[in-house]
View 1: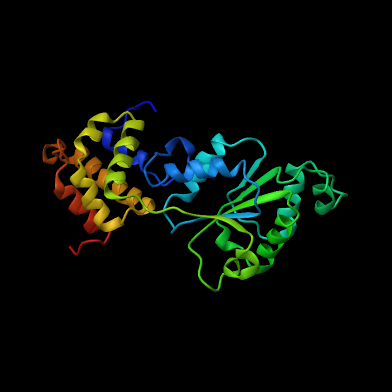
View 2 (view 1 turned 45 degrees about the vertical axis):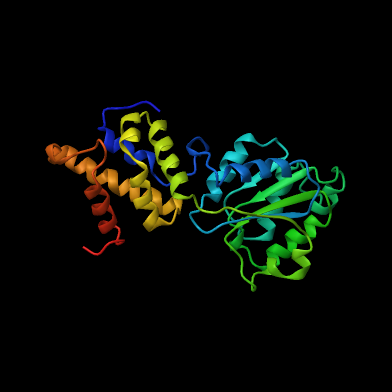
Length: 263
C-alpha cells in the first residue's frame, strides 16, 4: 500500500481497521498449521469438518485467505442464510442445476465429494438448517466445513448423529504474545510504516496481550486507539511524542480509554 498525505499515525490506524481482506492476513504459528490442514481437506473424502474458535480469533480472516488459494470447486458463504430455501437456491445456482430440477436430483450427476462448501458463522444456524446440511452430506456429493464459535452440549452439532459424521475438528487458538508482536509488525510493514514497526517492541506486544489475550479483534481495537491518540498528539502537540521506541504512557492511555485500566 502506498502512503498518502496523511501522517504516519493516521496511516497506522488504517492498518488496524477490523476488516477481513485476504491481503491483510498475517501468517503466524497459530494459523499456519490450520491453513495447511484446510488445504489438505481439499483432497479428503468426508462429510463434515469443523473450524472452531472464539469470536475475534481470526477464523473469517483465515477463511478469506483460504478462499484466495482454494480451487474452483470450493464454495464460500461468509454470511448466514436465513432460510433453507435461500441456501438451496444459491447452491443450485453455483452448481448449474436447473430451477426445475430438485437439488437432490441435480447432485446425482456429480462425482462423489466433488463439491466443498464452506459456511462461516455456522453458530447462527438452527437445528433444522444443520439437519439439512447433514442430509446433504449423506449424499456423499458435498462435503462441508462449518466455521463457528466453540460449541456446547446444547448445540445440535454436539449430538451423536452429527459427531459420527465429523471428520476433522480444527481449533484456532489466539496468538501468543510473540505471535502478536509479529502480527503488529507485519501489519505496519504492509502499510510501508517500517519506522513504526521498528519502534514497536516485543514488550509493547506483551503489554497489549496482557489485556486482549491475543484476541485479534480486541488487539486491532487497541492498536487503532493507540495510533488515534498518537495522531492527535502529532497534530496538536508533536513535541510530546516519543516513538523510538513508542512510549509506554501511550499504551497505558489506550488501555485506560478502552476500560482495561481504571483512570
